[in-house]
Every structure is written in structure tokens, then in C-alpha cells.
Amino acid sequence: MGEADEGHENALVYGQRMRALFEACGRPPDVTQKRLAAALFIAEGTLSRYLAGKRIAPERILDLFIAFLADHGQPLDDRERTGLHELREEAQRTSSQPAVRLAYTQGVVRKLRAEVAQLIQEQEQERAVRQARERAAAADLAEERGLRRAEADAADKELEAAREELDRERVRAERQEAATAEELVSLRSRLTVAEQERGRLVELVRVQEKKLRDAASYSRGIEDDYSRVREKAADLARELATVRHQVEMLNAEQVHPTAAHVLRLAGAPGELRVTPTVSAPETPAAIASQQTTGTPAVPPPRRNTPSGERRPPGRLRARWTGFPNDREASNRRRRRRVLMLVAAVAALSVGVARWPGEHRDATADLYAPACAVASPLQEGCVVHEKGQVTDKHSEGSDPPDLDLTILHESGHSATYTVGGDIYNAAQHGSTADLKIWKGRVTAITVAGKTDRQPADLDWPEIWTALLIGLGTALSGYTLLRWRRGPNQMSVIGILFAAAWTGLVAAISLGVTTLLALLGGAAFWLFGAAIAAVFIGIE
Image (cartoon, rainbow, N blue to C red; front, side, top):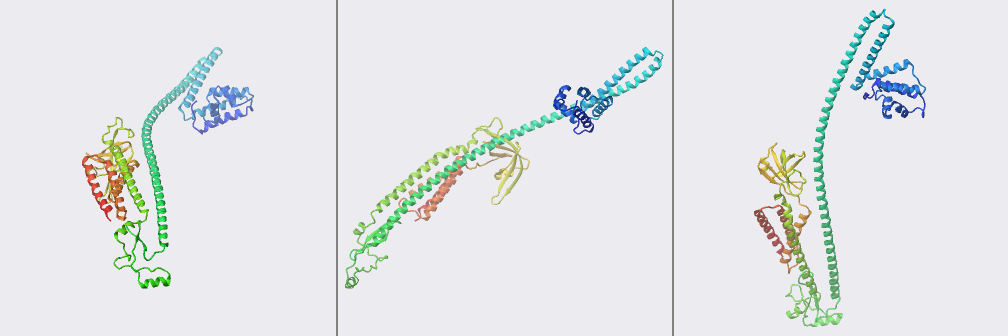
């Protein structure tokens, strides 16, 4: 009862003949496939495959099928029964399945043995009734036995060949099973690598989400600063409107010839001062002009002053130093500078307090222990992974970027920018030792040369560097220009100081030696001196 080849001609003819006889037997509900399957003691799905020619119904099933047809009014005569069995035998004989052919061979053997038994029985009967023809029949029987024995031997040989073919099929199946097992091991290894890669991607997503949160917080801080600047600009606009109103009021006043007040701008930018002027003695021409026009004559300016105004004595000038709100404006500027100094010290304090923690996180791989199991996603330990240099090339010039392409033992390849020593020592096929900390390659060693890979700055580190740079620049600006207003050069100086200090703070996060820290301090002092010169320029 083995499976036949799909679409095999003899199996299809045999199945179609059985289906035709079954459909001619009767109509539902008396005759259904379910009742036929129950009568044949098989499953309904097996019956469907028999009738479709996908499987070959054996002799026992065929006999039950013929009996079912006879019970339901469709008996078969000897010719149809013989033809149906011949179709079965031909389908079994031409099947590509060894088990089916073996069943066919066993059926032939049983048939031959049944025929031999029948012949023996007939001989015994003939021996009882035909004593006279016993010798002649014995000779014929012996000859017939020889032929049958030869056929039986041939059938035995075919059976043995079928058994050998079954053994070969079993060996092939075992080999295929072994290959499947190897493929399963390979798939499991790839699944492990994929899970590790998934963990790395999850970690990257977490870092990116943290960066997005930090960026959103930084954006909100900028918006708050912008709102405060807008409020300050509104206050300045209101003060400017007040000053303009006062100027208009002063311009509208009538100036008496003997006590004229001249409005002039003096002192610091934005500070208005009104200086009274003492008029010269009235001349006859001035008196005549006054009487003719009805307007008091303004005396001519003295030539000893560049602005043409007559300066009052020092005591009187001290009394007219400005409007009453000049002192309030000076107090506001002083308060703003104090607040700026407090904000600068606060920003510098927060940045300096955060710097050791960021520096510790940036250099934690130097002091972490080695992992017991080589997994790139383990926390708190360093993984050492082997790799092989597959390519080396340089890009650009003065100086060029030196790149090494390394194939990791996990299967993926990556390109790293390295220093000149390790680049010159590396060759195609050289073994590389990769030091991995939290999924990131922090150091590469090839032929005894080691190169540290700098980490990308994340938002907390950038925020710390910005706080230090901004606090330092504002502190220096406030102290150097405490009594002087801003100008273009001082703005350039404060921007340069903030950028310079932030850059030095960001670079020093990865510094691990005292000598390098001292060099960074000297580097910062050089830039700070330049910024101080710019801030102090009038």
C-alpha cells in the first residue's frame, strides 16, 4: 500500500475504473464514500486517494470493494472481476515504490503457490480416479513443478532484489537525515547570531530613543530661553518708548534765552543726559529781534566747544547729570550682570559636576573585567572577539584617513579608521583582536599594535560640554566687562570661548592619562587667552 507516483498512468487507470464502478453502483444517501470506507475498513481520505489514483488499492481492498458492489446491486462477472485484478497487478508492477512492487511480487508468489497447491490437489484427485494415467501425469507434474520452482526462484530473486533496494533506500534516508541534522545545527547557529544582532539593534534603538529625549529636553530649554529673550526685548521696547516720549516732551518745551536747556546724548550708549547751558549777555540786536518776532533770541554758540553748546560750570553740570530714571537703568544693568554671573557659575558648576561621571562612562572599558562567555551584548564586562583583516585603504590627503576592513568571527564585516602604526603593521589576512564593550568596538590589536576607537558623543556628553563652555565664557565675559557694555569684538570673544571650552571638554572625556589631561589644560589656556583678548578689546 505504498504511495504511487502522482499522475502514473496505470495507477490513474486503475483508480478511475474503481471510481466509475462506484459511481454506477447507486446514488446517495444509500451509497457514499463514507459508507464504502466503512465497508473497506479504511479511512475516507485513504479511499479518496485510491479512487484518485494517488495510491494503489491492494488485493484485499479490491475484494471488499467488489463485495460492496455486489451488495448494492452492481455485481461483477468473472471477466470484469479478472480485468479489474489485472489493472491492479499492472499498476503494482509498474509502480515506482519498492514497497508496492514487493506487494505485487508477494501476490504473484501467493498466486503461484495457490496454483501449485491446486495442482497437487487435482493430482491427488486424479490419482484416485485415474490410476492408469498416474505415471504420465507424474512426469508432466514433475516438469510442471520444475517450471513452477523456477518461477518461484525467480520470484525469490526479485524479492531479494526488492529487499536490497529497500536497504539502499534506508541508507539514503539515513544520510539525508544526517544532512538535515547538520543543516539544523547551522540554522540554530545563524539563529543565535540573529538574536545577538537583534539585541544589538534593540540597544541601538534604546540609545537613539534616549538621544531623542535629550534632544527634546534641549529643544524645550532653547524655547524657554527664547521666551525669556522675547520678554526682555519687550521690556527694552517699553523702555525705549518711554525715553522717546521724554525726548518729545523736552523738544516741545520752550527754551528761555537766559536759561536754555540743550538736550544731548552723553555717557554710555542708551543713557540720556540733559545739560543746562548758561546764555551770554543779551545784545541790542538780540533784543530787537526778540521785540520784532516775539521769539526769544538764542545766543550764538561758543567756538571753544566741538558741539557748539556752551558748557555750564562743573558744579551746575554735576547737578544735571541725566534723567531721574538713569540711576534705575544703571541698577537694572547691574542686576542683569549679577544674574548673568550667577547663571554662568551655576552652568559651570553643573557641567564640572557631570564631567567626572561622563569621563568614567567613556573610559569604563579600560577597567572592566573580561566576560566569561563571548557575547557582545553582555553588561559590565569586556568581550574579546577574533577577526581577520580583509582590506586596507586610505582616503584623502594631508593626512589621509587610514581604514581597515575586518571580518568578525560572527560573520559580519566592518571598516574602522585607525592610526598609522597599526595600519602599517596590518596585512591582508592578519589576525585582529577586537575589544568589545556594550556592543561597541573600543580597541583593535593587530600584530602587537593597538588602536583605540573613539566613541560617538551622545546627548548627555554634548550637554555637559555645552554647560562647561557656556559657563566659562559667561563668567569671563561678566568679569572682564563688568563696567563696560558689549561690543562686536566681545561677542566674538565669548562665542569663541564657549566653543573652545566645550570642544576641549568633549575631547578630554576619552583621555586616560595624567599627561594627556595636562596637555589638554595647556591647550585650553591657549584658547582662553585668545578669547580674553577679544573680550577685553574696546
